[in-house]
Image (spheres, rainbow, N blue to C red):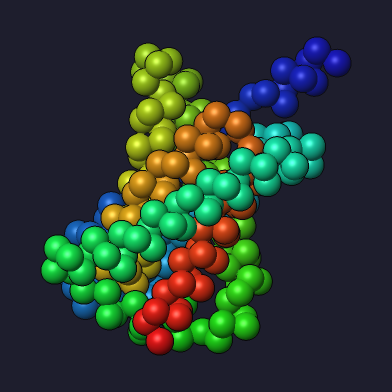
Length: 229
């Protein structure tokens, strides 16, 4: 039993999390015409999910490592829902009042794929599905594996969580599809990624970040849909 438990704790192929990090970085070295291609924009996420699949096939206790143990669901909802509500209110306020006040454009939000999709499809099902996929990628896989990489290196243990958190939040905020779709507002994803990342680091609970992500986007989508229509 001791050997089995030890084997489950071993983290294999955590370096696969570097695939989306490197591909996101390389995206910004490409010519502008290539950056506009959807196949290029989605390449980092495709590589991330591929890395996740390979990593999952080579490790044990996957649900525990990702923060998806069924016993964590109630705790995740208890923390995630109020966090999402708070972030939703803050971000809506930033978009509708602060950004126009400093001369920023928000009219382009009317033409994003999310705005063009029927509300009956987005609320809540598409938003929930997107939240599950994004959090599985950026918090469960990317943040968790970056933390494992940092913890297994010569980096001081006190710095490992901060480096993993900052790295995952930056990759999330500068994801090519994110910057192409939300333009200057992609910076909002940076503090979203920091908050959701802290939530995951403190609780090791992906249900919490999924709930926070979904609730926040539902609030933002519903308000902006009405105001910008």
